[in-house]
Length: 338
Image 1 (tube, one colour):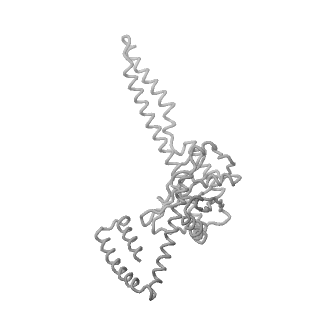
Image 2 (image 1 turned 90 degrees about the vertical axis):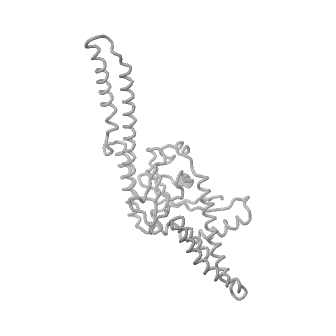
Image 3 (image 1 turned 120 degrees about the vertical axis):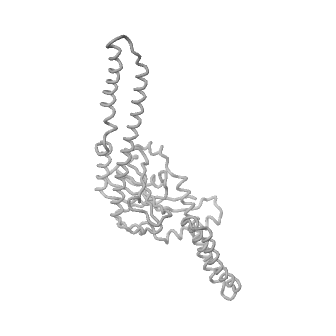
Protein backbone atom coordinates (compact mmCIF):
# COMPACT_ATOMS: atom_id res chain seq x y z
CA UNK A 1 0.00 0.00 0.00
CA UNK A 2 2.84 2.38 0.77
CA UNK A 3 4.52 1.59 -2.57
CA UNK A 4 1.23 2.23 -4.40
CA UNK A 5 0.78 5.58 -2.63
CA UNK A 6 4.31 6.67 -3.56
CA UNK A 7 3.84 5.63 -7.20
CA UNK A 8 0.49 7.42 -7.46
CA UNK A 9 2.10 10.54 -6.02
CA UNK A 10 4.79 10.38 -8.71
CA UNK A 11 2.13 9.98 -11.40
CA UNK A 12 0.26 13.00 -10.05
CA UNK A 13 3.38 15.16 -10.16
CA UNK A 14 5.05 13.95 -13.37
CA UNK A 15 2.16 12.90 -15.64
CA UNK A 16 -1.00 14.58 -14.40
CA UNK A 17 1.03 17.70 -13.44
CA UNK A 18 -1.04 18.20 -10.32
CA UNK A 19 -0.20 20.99 -7.95
CA UNK A 20 2.72 19.97 -5.73
CA UNK A 21 0.85 20.97 -2.58
CA UNK A 22 -2.12 18.74 -3.46
CA UNK A 23 0.20 15.84 -4.25
CA UNK A 24 1.92 16.22 -0.88
CA UNK A 25 -1.46 16.36 0.89
CA UNK A 26 -2.49 13.14 -0.87
CA UNK A 27 0.78 11.45 0.08
CA UNK A 28 0.60 12.59 3.71
CA UNK A 29 -3.09 11.73 4.08
CA UNK A 30 -2.94 8.18 2.77
CA UNK A 31 0.64 7.61 3.88
CA UNK A 32 -0.17 8.39 7.52
CA UNK A 33 -3.00 5.84 7.53
CA UNK A 34 -0.75 3.21 5.95
CA UNK A 35 2.02 3.95 8.47
CA UNK A 36 -0.46 3.34 11.28
CA UNK A 37 -1.38 -0.03 9.78
CA UNK A 38 2.27 -0.91 9.27
CA UNK A 39 3.20 0.03 12.85
CA UNK A 40 0.40 -2.20 14.16
CA UNK A 41 1.68 -5.08 12.04
CA UNK A 42 5.27 -4.58 13.21
CA UNK A 43 4.16 -4.58 16.83
CA UNK A 44 2.52 -8.01 16.42
CA UNK A 45 4.89 -9.93 14.16
CA UNK A 46 4.88 -13.13 16.23
CA UNK A 47 1.09 -13.03 16.65
CA UNK A 48 0.45 -13.22 12.88
CA UNK A 49 1.74 -9.86 11.69
CA UNK A 50 4.42 -11.60 9.65
CA UNK A 51 1.85 -12.84 7.11
CA UNK A 52 1.00 -9.47 5.42
CA UNK A 53 4.72 -8.60 5.48
CA UNK A 54 5.49 -11.87 3.74
CA UNK A 55 2.83 -11.23 1.07
CA UNK A 56 4.11 -7.69 0.52
CA UNK A 57 7.69 -8.95 0.19
CA UNK A 58 6.60 -11.62 -2.29
CA UNK A 59 4.68 -9.19 -4.51
CA UNK A 60 7.49 -6.64 -4.38
CA UNK A 61 10.04 -9.33 -5.31
CA UNK A 62 7.95 -10.43 -8.29
CA UNK A 63 7.60 -6.87 -9.61
CA UNK A 64 11.31 -6.16 -9.08
CA UNK A 65 12.34 -9.40 -10.81
CA UNK A 66 10.14 -8.69 -13.83
CA UNK A 67 11.38 -5.11 -14.14
CA UNK A 68 15.03 -6.13 -13.66
CA UNK A 69 14.89 -8.85 -16.32
CA UNK A 70 12.96 -6.69 -18.79
CA UNK A 71 15.47 -3.85 -18.48
CA UNK A 72 18.40 -6.22 -19.08
CA UNK A 73 16.66 -7.75 -22.10
CA UNK A 74 15.98 -4.31 -23.60
CA UNK A 75 19.59 -3.25 -23.08
CA UNK A 76 20.74 -6.42 -24.81
CA UNK A 77 18.48 -5.67 -27.79
CA UNK A 78 19.84 -2.13 -28.05
CA UNK A 79 23.41 -3.38 -27.80
CA UNK A 80 23.00 -6.11 -30.43
CA UNK A 81 20.88 -4.24 -32.98
CA UNK A 82 21.85 -4.61 -36.63
CA UNK A 83 23.66 -1.76 -38.35
CA UNK A 84 22.42 -0.21 -41.57
CA UNK A 85 25.75 -1.05 -43.25
CA UNK A 86 25.01 -4.74 -42.76
CA UNK A 87 21.63 -4.31 -44.46
CA UNK A 88 23.23 -2.43 -47.35
CA UNK A 89 25.75 -5.24 -47.82
CA UNK A 90 22.92 -7.77 -48.11
CA UNK A 91 21.25 -5.77 -50.89
CA UNK A 92 17.60 -5.01 -51.51
CA UNK A 93 16.73 -8.73 -51.59
CA UNK A 94 18.31 -9.12 -48.12
CA UNK A 95 20.18 -12.22 -49.30
CA UNK A 96 16.94 -14.17 -49.72
CA UNK A 97 13.80 -14.33 -51.87
CA UNK A 98 11.20 -11.56 -51.47
CA UNK A 99 7.63 -12.79 -51.92
CA UNK A 100 4.45 -10.64 -51.98
CA UNK A 101 3.05 -9.96 -48.55
CA UNK A 102 3.39 -7.72 -45.50
CA UNK A 103 5.50 -8.91 -42.58
CA UNK A 104 4.88 -7.22 -39.21
CA UNK A 105 7.88 -7.78 -36.97
CA UNK A 106 7.14 -6.86 -33.37
CA UNK A 107 10.00 -5.59 -31.21
CA UNK A 108 10.70 -3.03 -28.49
CA UNK A 109 13.20 -0.82 -30.32
CA UNK A 110 12.14 2.66 -31.39
CA UNK A 111 15.30 3.12 -33.48
CA UNK A 112 17.54 0.69 -35.29
CA UNK A 113 17.05 -2.80 -36.70
CA UNK A 114 16.41 -5.53 -34.10
CA UNK A 115 18.78 -8.46 -33.95
CA UNK A 116 15.86 -10.90 -34.18
CA UNK A 117 15.47 -9.80 -37.81
CA UNK A 118 18.71 -11.60 -38.71
CA UNK A 119 17.30 -14.77 -37.16
CA UNK A 120 14.34 -14.55 -39.53
CA UNK A 121 16.72 -14.07 -42.47
CA UNK A 122 18.71 -17.14 -41.42
CA UNK A 123 15.74 -19.42 -40.69
CA UNK A 124 13.15 -18.46 -43.31
CA UNK A 125 13.61 -19.49 -46.96
CA UNK A 126 11.81 -16.34 -48.17
CA UNK A 127 10.81 -12.96 -46.77
CA UNK A 128 7.90 -10.65 -47.43
CA UNK A 129 8.16 -7.85 -49.97
CA UNK A 130 7.18 -5.25 -47.35
CA UNK A 131 8.59 -5.40 -43.82
CA UNK A 132 7.30 -3.21 -40.99
CA UNK A 133 9.04 -3.12 -37.60
CA UNK A 134 6.16 -2.53 -35.18
CA UNK A 135 6.89 -1.10 -31.73
CA UNK A 136 4.08 -0.66 -29.17
CA UNK A 137 4.55 2.33 -26.86
CA UNK A 138 2.28 3.78 -24.19
CA UNK A 139 2.25 7.56 -23.88
CA UNK A 140 1.21 9.61 -20.81
CA UNK A 141 -2.13 10.76 -22.22
CA UNK A 142 -5.56 9.13 -21.77
CA UNK A 143 -6.47 8.35 -25.40
CA UNK A 144 -4.54 8.58 -28.68
CA UNK A 145 -6.72 9.49 -31.72
CA UNK A 146 -6.87 6.87 -34.46
CA UNK A 147 -5.38 9.22 -37.06
CA UNK A 148 -2.37 9.79 -34.78
CA UNK A 149 -1.91 6.18 -33.76
CA UNK A 150 1.03 5.31 -36.00
CA UNK A 151 4.33 7.07 -36.62
CA UNK A 152 6.29 5.81 -39.63
CA UNK A 153 9.89 6.14 -40.67
CA UNK A 154 11.84 4.58 -43.51
CA UNK A 155 14.61 2.30 -42.29
CA UNK A 156 16.58 1.53 -45.48
CA UNK A 157 16.58 2.88 -49.05
CA UNK A 158 13.32 2.84 -50.98
CA UNK A 159 13.99 -0.38 -52.89
CA UNK A 160 14.22 -2.29 -49.59
CA UNK A 161 10.59 -1.53 -48.62
CA UNK A 162 11.36 -1.66 -44.89
CA UNK A 163 9.65 0.72 -42.48
CA UNK A 164 9.60 1.50 -38.79
CA UNK A 165 6.19 1.91 -37.15
CA UNK A 166 5.60 3.14 -33.60
CA UNK A 167 2.06 2.36 -32.47
CA UNK A 168 1.11 4.73 -29.65
CA UNK A 169 -1.56 3.97 -27.05
CA UNK A 170 -2.80 6.01 -24.11
CA UNK A 171 -3.22 4.61 -20.64
CA UNK A 172 -7.00 4.39 -21.21
CA UNK A 173 -6.77 2.75 -24.63
CA UNK A 174 -7.59 -0.94 -24.73
CA UNK A 175 -5.62 -3.02 -27.24
CA UNK A 176 -8.40 -5.42 -28.14
CA UNK A 177 -9.20 -4.27 -31.66
CA UNK A 178 -9.65 -6.85 -34.38
CA UNK A 179 -6.47 -7.65 -36.26
CA UNK A 180 -8.11 -6.82 -39.60
CA UNK A 181 -9.04 -3.33 -38.39
CA UNK A 182 -5.50 -2.89 -37.07
CA UNK A 183 -4.02 -3.96 -40.41
CA UNK A 184 -6.32 -1.66 -42.41
CA UNK A 185 -5.51 1.34 -40.24
CA UNK A 186 -1.79 0.58 -40.45
CA UNK A 187 -1.83 0.37 -44.26
CA UNK A 188 -3.85 3.58 -44.57
CA UNK A 189 -1.36 5.37 -42.32
CA UNK A 190 1.54 3.95 -44.31
CA UNK A 191 0.05 5.22 -47.58
CA UNK A 192 -0.36 8.68 -46.05
CA UNK A 193 3.28 8.57 -44.96
CA UNK A 194 4.45 7.66 -48.47
CA UNK A 195 2.43 10.48 -50.03
CA UNK A 196 3.65 13.00 -47.48
CA UNK A 197 7.25 11.85 -47.97
CA UNK A 198 6.96 12.24 -51.74
CA UNK A 199 5.43 15.70 -51.34
CA UNK A 200 8.16 16.82 -48.94
CA UNK A 201 10.84 15.51 -51.30
CA UNK A 202 9.28 17.38 -54.24
CA UNK A 203 9.05 20.61 -52.24
CA UNK A 204 12.66 20.25 -51.11
CA UNK A 205 13.83 19.70 -54.68
CA UNK A 206 11.75 22.66 -55.82
CA UNK A 207 13.30 24.88 -53.15
CA UNK A 208 16.83 23.79 -54.05
CA UNK A 209 16.13 24.30 -57.75
CA UNK A 210 14.71 27.77 -57.14
CA UNK A 211 17.80 28.75 -55.16
CA UNK A 212 20.06 27.47 -57.94
CA UNK A 213 18.11 29.35 -60.61
CA UNK A 214 18.22 32.56 -58.59
CA UNK A 215 21.95 32.27 -58.06
CA UNK A 216 22.60 31.44 -61.72
CA UNK A 217 20.39 34.35 -62.85
CA UNK A 218 22.16 36.77 -60.52
CA UNK A 219 25.60 35.62 -61.64
CA UNK A 220 24.54 35.87 -65.28
CA UNK A 221 23.31 39.45 -64.94
CA UNK A 222 26.48 40.46 -63.10
CA UNK A 223 28.81 38.85 -65.63
CA UNK A 224 26.95 39.93 -68.79
CA UNK A 225 28.49 43.33 -69.44
CA UNK A 226 27.17 45.17 -72.55
CA UNK A 227 29.50 44.71 -75.49
CA UNK A 228 29.15 46.71 -78.71
CA UNK A 229 26.50 49.28 -79.54
CA UNK A 230 22.92 49.51 -80.65
CA UNK A 231 20.94 46.31 -81.04
CA UNK A 232 23.81 44.10 -79.80
CA UNK A 233 23.80 45.75 -76.39
CA UNK A 234 20.08 45.11 -75.98
CA UNK A 235 20.04 41.64 -77.51
CA UNK A 236 22.68 39.94 -75.37
CA UNK A 237 21.01 39.97 -71.91
CA UNK A 238 17.61 39.15 -73.41
CA UNK A 239 19.00 36.12 -75.22
CA UNK A 240 20.70 34.90 -72.04
CA UNK A 241 17.51 35.29 -70.01
CA UNK A 242 15.45 33.54 -72.66
CA UNK A 243 17.92 30.67 -72.83
CA UNK A 244 17.92 30.40 -69.06
CA UNK A 245 14.13 30.30 -68.91
CA UNK A 246 13.91 27.70 -71.68
CA UNK A 247 16.47 25.35 -70.16
CA UNK A 248 15.33 25.89 -66.59
CA UNK A 249 11.57 25.76 -66.83
CA UNK A 250 11.23 23.22 -69.62
CA UNK A 251 13.69 20.56 -68.43
CA UNK A 252 14.06 20.87 -64.66
CA UNK A 253 10.87 22.30 -63.20
CA UNK A 254 8.32 19.70 -64.32
CA UNK A 255 9.90 16.96 -62.16
CA UNK A 256 9.66 19.11 -59.04
CA UNK A 257 6.25 20.54 -59.81
CA UNK A 258 4.91 17.05 -60.50
CA UNK A 259 2.03 16.20 -58.16
CA UNK A 260 2.38 13.31 -55.79
CA UNK A 261 -0.28 11.35 -57.68
CA UNK A 262 1.75 11.60 -60.93
CA UNK A 263 5.07 10.67 -59.35
CA UNK A 264 6.11 7.32 -60.90
CA UNK A 265 8.22 6.37 -57.88
CA UNK A 266 5.30 6.96 -55.53
CA UNK A 267 2.89 5.08 -57.77
CA UNK A 268 5.27 2.14 -57.91
CA UNK A 269 5.56 2.02 -54.12
CA UNK A 270 1.80 2.32 -53.64
CA UNK A 271 1.10 -0.42 -56.18
CA UNK A 272 3.69 -2.67 -54.53
CA UNK A 273 2.12 -1.98 -51.14
CA UNK A 274 -1.38 -2.80 -52.43
CA UNK A 275 -0.11 -6.02 -53.98
CA UNK A 276 1.55 -6.98 -50.70
CA UNK A 277 -1.63 -6.14 -48.78
CA UNK A 278 -3.73 -8.34 -51.05
CA UNK A 279 -1.32 -11.23 -50.46
CA UNK A 280 -1.93 -11.04 -46.72
CA UNK A 281 -0.24 -10.21 -43.43
CA UNK A 282 2.16 -12.31 -41.40
CA UNK A 283 3.09 -11.55 -37.80
CA UNK A 284 6.77 -12.19 -37.12
CA UNK A 285 7.35 -12.69 -33.41
CA UNK A 286 10.56 -13.41 -31.59
CA UNK A 287 10.50 -15.87 -28.71
CA UNK A 288 13.40 -14.60 -26.63
CA UNK A 289 15.12 -16.75 -24.04
CA UNK A 290 16.96 -14.56 -21.51
CA UNK A 291 20.02 -16.05 -19.85
CA UNK A 292 22.67 -14.59 -17.58
CA UNK A 293 26.25 -14.64 -18.77
CA UNK A 294 28.60 -17.28 -17.41
CA UNK A 295 30.73 -14.73 -15.57
CA UNK A 296 27.71 -13.24 -13.75
CA UNK A 297 27.21 -13.40 -10.01
CA UNK A 298 25.31 -16.29 -8.50
CA UNK A 299 22.42 -14.06 -7.41
CA UNK A 300 22.00 -12.67 -10.92
CA UNK A 301 22.01 -16.16 -12.42
CA UNK A 302 19.42 -17.24 -9.88
CA UNK A 303 17.13 -14.30 -10.60
CA UNK A 304 17.42 -14.35 -14.41
CA UNK A 305 17.78 -18.05 -15.22
CA UNK A 306 15.09 -19.28 -12.85
CA UNK A 307 12.76 -16.62 -11.41
CA UNK A 308 12.51 -14.33 -14.45
CA UNK A 309 12.32 -17.30 -16.84
CA UNK A 310 9.50 -18.77 -14.75
CA UNK A 311 7.58 -15.49 -14.94
CA UNK A 312 8.04 -15.20 -18.73
CA UNK A 313 6.92 -18.79 -19.31
CA UNK A 314 3.76 -18.32 -17.24
CA UNK A 315 2.60 -14.89 -18.44
CA UNK A 316 0.29 -14.20 -21.35
CA UNK A 317 2.32 -13.78 -24.50
CA UNK A 318 1.82 -11.34 -27.34
CA UNK A 319 -0.09 -13.87 -29.45
CA UNK A 320 -2.81 -14.11 -26.80
CA UNK A 321 -3.29 -10.33 -26.68
CA UNK A 322 -3.31 -9.63 -30.44
CA UNK A 323 -6.23 -11.93 -31.41
CA UNK A 324 -4.39 -13.05 -34.52
CA UNK A 325 -5.03 -16.44 -36.18
CA UNK A 326 -2.23 -18.88 -35.49
CA UNK A 327 -1.85 -19.50 -39.21
CA UNK A 328 -0.64 -15.89 -39.63
CA UNK A 329 2.07 -16.11 -36.95
CA UNK A 330 5.71 -17.11 -37.36
CA UNK A 331 7.91 -17.36 -34.28
CA UNK A 332 11.68 -17.63 -34.19
CA UNK A 333 13.63 -18.32 -31.04
CA UNK A 334 16.63 -16.32 -29.88
CA UNK A 335 18.76 -16.30 -26.74
CA UNK A 336 19.68 -13.01 -25.09
CA UNK A 337 22.80 -13.14 -22.92
CA UNK A 338 22.52 -10.41 -20.29
